[in-house]
Image (cartoon, rainbow, N blue to C red; front, side, top):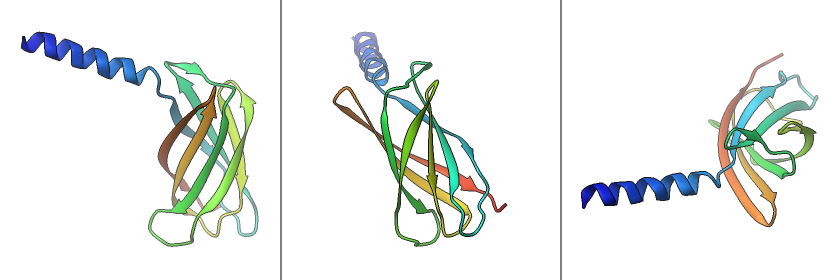
Amino acid sequence: MKKVVAILLMLLLFGCSSEAIDFTVERVSPYQAAEAITIVIQAEKNGTAIADLELSGQLEMAKMDHGTIEVVFTNQGDGMYEGEVELPMGGEWIIDLTAEMDGKTYEELLTFDVNEG
């Protein structure tokens, strides 16, 4: 009985995970005062690039309060999305990503560093 429950639980977990989109911060340009930085996000589902998302995010600094800053990403092909945003400083940032595709909404929280240029 325990094996049946364990197998059902694994099937449920694997079944749900196939619907998830994996987001990764691929590249962030260095911070320079009064200039926009570029953030590149990669989106994949089961190892395949996702190229038809509407992707945006809310940025906030991890250890200081600078409020939230919005960024909208544009599709660059091959599952890569690029956004430009002017930040008040470099350091550790958190992005709350929201993606929409085929009527479904996906969200993920990522942390990344913006190095001083």
